[in-house]
Image 1 (spheres, one colour):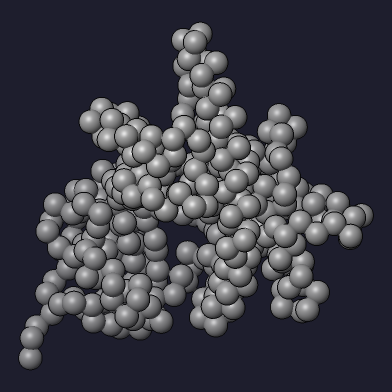
Image 2 (cartoon, one colour; image 1 turned 180 degrees about the vertical axis):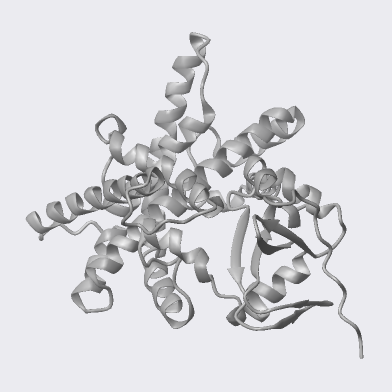
Length: 357
């Protein structure tokens, strides 16, 4: 009988383990774990032993083949505190039901209309950049990508042209959401939500800002029931009428789309533009493709699929700088993963960043 291999362990401090190193630079930490040359690596967060998943083979087993044995467990709590019971927090049949309901909203005719609107938003953005460049003004690409991404999401959800100057509370809340979640994940002590700790107050403010904006949109729709926009919110309201979604479900899924779709898209765009700017030969080839297929016009439904090099650039940007660079799970029972034995109750962290390398 083949004997299980010991899982290599990263050295850390006697009491804190690898906590400080992980908090200060999760990518650098995972790169050091990757240097051990193993698909699984042990490390410690204070007294808690954890496992880092660093190979595609181990990830396939944990997140697909044997995913039923790796629920989100305690990792769901921070997400649920902020977003409610939305798609990223659900599992099993409930996850399948919500995934189906959310996916139905992104039908082809909706995507076609969204593309036309998004092209208009990008054209306006680029016109603004032209004006800034004439005055040698510095353009903060991360901030610009955040602003346009949120505008796209709000338009898709509610058919609203978002004025960020009038919605600073919403914008601040959404931009702060992932920072707050990361603080909660790496916190040594997770106090109950009802305790008014600084972190809990930040979580509550972020959640309340998103709920308040969504409630405002509910009030607008109730005041104008004859208006049918065909947006994602309309889709959710139709499902509520037939009893497939509750009001709580709608709030949770909207918060999930706002937070999960915002920072990930903005980050992916910003990093990809950074990489393109660092490689002039790539820029030249990219422009050549755009000129050939777009002829100076914004992309449309018929020609966007022809932009193969553009798609590859974006995919490579996400490989090098994955917007979601880490996922976590907890084993329910003892399990064999490749040549390793993982005991029940083990927290598992998948490093997408490391696997892509």
